[in-house]
Length: 346
Length: 293
Image (cartoon, rainbow over all chains, first blue to last red; front, side):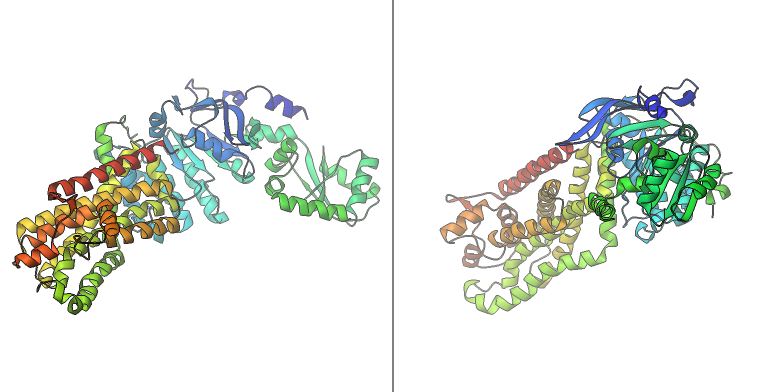
């Protein structure tokens, strides 16, 4: 896997310096680390976020994404390395950083007893937004997320998606340079998720802002200009979604068979391919899936129940760099043990 | 429904809001908005207004009326409810103030505390706003109990009403500060409620809200003098009794005043004790919240 060494070795350089307008990076991270007693949550990472881009942190739960975002937002004190956000050091210039960032957390941080408008006003006061600017700005951000009509409703009457939209509006109220979204769509239904993404994309056209988000949904990572895949506290690879997919470059073939073990053995002996089990299917990566399937039926010698061929997706990228799918990576250890026991019992 | 498209035209030139650097003015704004939030929440919560009044009124009218026959030989003709009234004035603000402080624990549970703690203002402003809010809300509750003075034969003397109200606000502030200080460490509502129940009820009983503080058993005298609430209840009783038309014998029996080794502690000093404790607890609360990540 040559892409791995190329991408993971040196501190990642922005691919083609996508920003290109000479502005300083919105975020710089050098050797940033966080250790909780025995656990190294973030193991010394390096990267830059270009001003104006949408930068995604992709990885399973527990990979260190939220800890990293917490350090960048001055909520978690790093145990090593340094980072700057909007040109300010996250440890030494905490207030400066806070003034320049907007935050949308995984869990809601709204006051349900207050109206949407009161929540925003409170935020404006806490952030010292000039009084004369508050009404216009409030209207702008509420319009942007489609909640202007509901401004006098109490937040406790809002749906999950509306709350998230209000939080995004609130995060923008003080015109931050960088908006941090920690799993902005987690816990929302697919339709609401896509509408949230509509608002985020819309936002990019209206405001001069850098967006830094974390997600464990592969499809959402596609919306990012660049993504960093994080696993076990380290950044494994960082590039544009297209470049990452190109680096994998192979099609994925997944087989359902009557005898998976025999199929794996046959693939190794007759085709020279290393197959693995994913989601109950024998999975192999090949150059051209369409041409491979007829040969497979002719020579495998194990009855095939189903076959599917897919072009590389970010899932494959993830798998190729971490050796596991994101869902498997998220499986708890007990799940893993059970799967293991089941495989051994065969 | 993409509202964004509908409204794209009118808001085309997005004015970037410039947020100024941290300043005293910014902190004052923060204190004010946190204080306002407490008031908004309180005014929206009618249940809370009613329930926190229920207990003082129970003590005043049910306990006060129920025990009055039993107590009549010792009160020299003074209505027991009149005697208990200053204690109930203190009680009315205590529970409301503790409840206000408890809201910090709720805020943490519902995530809102984080919104306040990540703001680019001093943490102290948030704590101060919360304490002022608790004091204001409790003061309002105290006003309601002041308003019923006539029902227990206490005259509406302006100087007395003002003095009592000032003492109530002071007590409410101190208790909110205590609650916020506790809430910095205690992150679960159950634990917080257990702690306050364990502390507040005994403090109330020991304070002399329901009995004269002279000629008590030694152990109770010691506890009473150590109990901070004693120094809020006593000046209130003093203020009320100064405006009652009663016999010197009744006054001596019912309003003996708090003494330190035989020296009667002046009301101003008592208020000073409460204020000092309040300020110390406020300082600890600010320190606790400022050092938290």
